[in-house]
Length: 239
Image 1 (cartoon, rainbow, N blue to C red):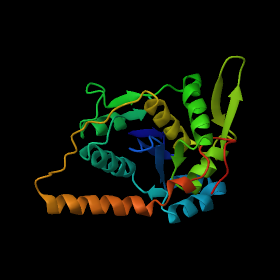
Image 2 (tube, helix red, strand yellow; image 1 turned 135 degrees about the horizontal axis):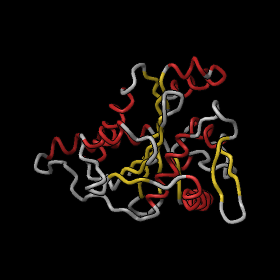
Image 3 (cartoon, helix red, strand yellow; image 1 turned 180 degrees about the vertical axis):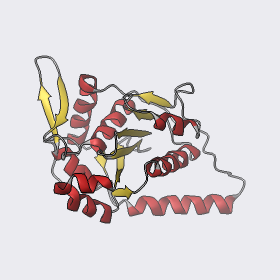
Image 4 (cartoon, rainbow, N blue to C red; image 1 turned 60 degrees about the vertical axis):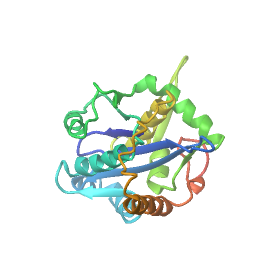
């Protein structure tokens, strides 16, 4: 499944892809983010850090608003075509053009592929689930310096009966990729099932094997997910 969290041009647009390993049922996560080039000018204190994330292949910096959505839709459409898309979980606030864009690939509320994830105190279950599963190594994130940084920016505020997540410092402390992962954890906790139809033509074995080989190569470039860094503030240490 895929989860999104993004705001305006002063934010990162975080995307989390979360799936279950067939044999072990471990949750395996991969993340990527997008940001507008103007963010580097407005937030010069983190500009060099963002450029490092781009060099590491963890962040895409775009020039024109909408370029990020094009690439995000391509990613979701590819997962959907493989028969692996159980849902797209999003922050219900400020979706706007994202809903329209997802409709183009038939990801809608009506067909139950587009789901709004609770925010604020409603995220408490996802935060606690991620904490426990990270510690038990049943939730593993691909190595990501960007995610490690975002986790460090998260501040967990306890109350008498609940917890909620905020930023350590407003403005420069970005947490959008982490928030996308929490949306994914919330959705995965509901045990969604992907459409079994892969969209791959099994009659054309040569083409099928080529696509499988390409998928294996793409996964190998992600590295060993067991070497991933922390995904929740205060849990684990970066690889």
